[in-house]
Length: 281
Image (tube, one colour):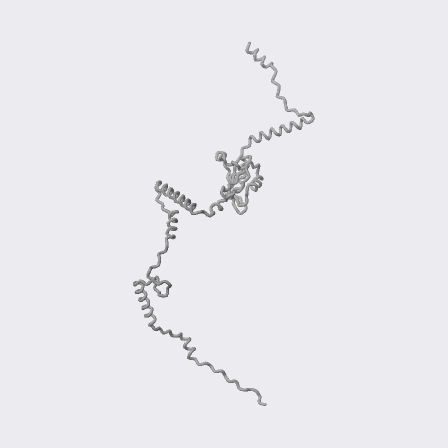
């Protein structure tokens, strides 16, 4: 009986009053105020349900930068974040980027629609990236404005270097090549390649001076300003003079060609005497 009385007492107790609804400052604007509150609550609930999706876009044409990409892909849905991969040295686009949409359903639609799409004479490659594969630092500093590097790599690598800098650079390259050969040998790979060491040796060989002329031809002529008058040089000079005399004693006859002979044998034609056709007075 005591249990029944307790249950009946709980049922007879008054129910808790419902929470008071939000009230507008002016009673006549209460209905409009409640509609705004309900709209905000619906938007908040929709945002909580949406899951962002990331799309990889490759084979991007030149000249397509962040503003153009944001404007073009914004046609499909709300773009929350965007990152275009650029070279840290030159600042040029690498041709691919990542786009995050507010909804993963929109991202999947973009990946299916824009894959193999011909855009500015290039076939775009789009792929949906699952949330597990998205790196946490993928969109790091994506909101910052891109600034072109002050020292591009072309200017930095093509600058004129001193001999000390060239020597240091050559030493560093040779050391890296030596380490590479050592790693290949440790892994059992018998692979030989010329590398920088062969280039260095070829340059050293080019720097070697050409062999000097033999002393046989030095100051053999007596007309030189400072002729050498050693006995051996005098003998060589006499021998060379004898060879020149022997060559001079030989007589060679050069016959003219046949056309020249025929021209010489032909007599010259005498001009004809024209008769005097003038009338005699």
